[in-house]
Image (tube, rainbow, N blue to C red; front, side):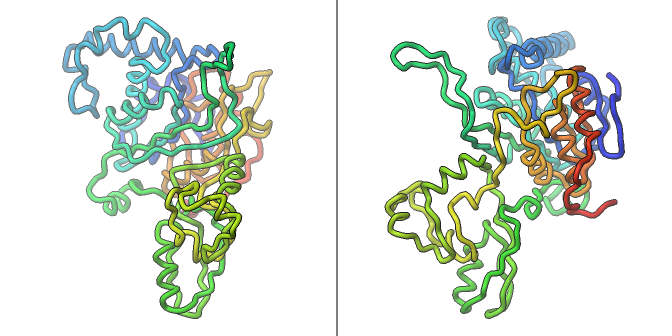
Length: 410
C-alpha cells in the first residue's frame, strides 16, 4: 500500500481499496464516484472474480472470529442471520452475483460512508446481473438510496451461446445501472449544505441543453403557462410580459442515452416545435398512446426550441471499445472496461460541490481522475492492479483541457 502518484489535483494510491480506505480520515471527502468490478468474472479477470470471493471470505472469517457482535457493520441496524455466514454452499461456486459479492461491496461501501462528509453522495456503476446486490450492499452499509440512473446504449454486443433453432443464452446488453446513495444529513438539507457543502445535487451544472435560448414572452397567461411547464424541465421564467427571457437547460433526468438511442427515440417521437404541435405523420407515428403513453402535450411547449424527445435527456457516446484518446495503453496493456469521459465528468459535477474532493476506490485506467481534473475537483484514487497504474499516470500526464469552474478557484 503506497502512494504511486501525486500532483496538485490527484493522489493515486496503489493497494487494496479496503486497506487504503481505512487510512483515510472520517468525513474527509465530498463524494464517491466509482466504477467497481461487477462480480461476473469478466474476461476471466481475477479482480472481478477470485479476488472478490477471497476478500469476502477473509472479512467473513475475521468478523466471525471476533464474535457475534462483529456481524453488524457500523451502518447496519441489525446483524445478518447466522445462516448467511455458515452456509458454505453459498460461497462454493463463482461470484456471479452471489452473497460474497454483496458482502464485498458492503465492506468498501461502509468505509466510503465513513470517509464521506454528512450528506455526501455515492454514485456507483453496476452490472445488469449483479447491481441488485450492489444496491442492497450500499443500503445495508448505511446509505440512503436516493435514485438509480440508467445509461442506455444501442451498440452493446450479445455474449450469447447460439443454439439450434434460433435459441440463445443472453440478451443484447443495452443499459448499465448507476446506484445513487447519500450519507445521512446533519440536520436539514439546507443546514447540511451550509455546514459541509454536501447533501444536494448540482442541478445547474448538469442541465440538459445548456446553451442559452431567448424565449419571447407573450401574454400574462402564456407566460404563466410556460412557467408551470418549465418547472422540473427548464429554468422558470421571471421576466415581465413582453420582455425576452434567457432560459437555461432542462432539469437533468435519471436516464442518459447514447447517440444510437437518441436517433431511435427521435425517430419514434417525431420533431416538435415550440407550442407542442405535431404533424399528421408524427401523430400517426406516436398515436394517442405513443412512445410516452398518455404524454403531456404541455411538456413540449414553450421552450423556444425544436426537436425530438431526445433533447430532454443527457447524451453520452457509447463505444464497445473506447477511442484511443480515452483508452491509454502502456507496454501493450489496456484496461478492458473504460467509461466515456464525458459521462464521468457529468457524474462528478452532479454529486460534488465546486472544488470538492472526489473519492474513486476503483481507479481502473483513471477516467474518474481525469474527469476531476477537467471539472476543477480534487481526486483520491485507489487502484489494486499494478498493471493499470501506468495507464492512470499516462492519462494524467497528457495535456488536459480544463472545463468551466462552477465554484471559482480556491
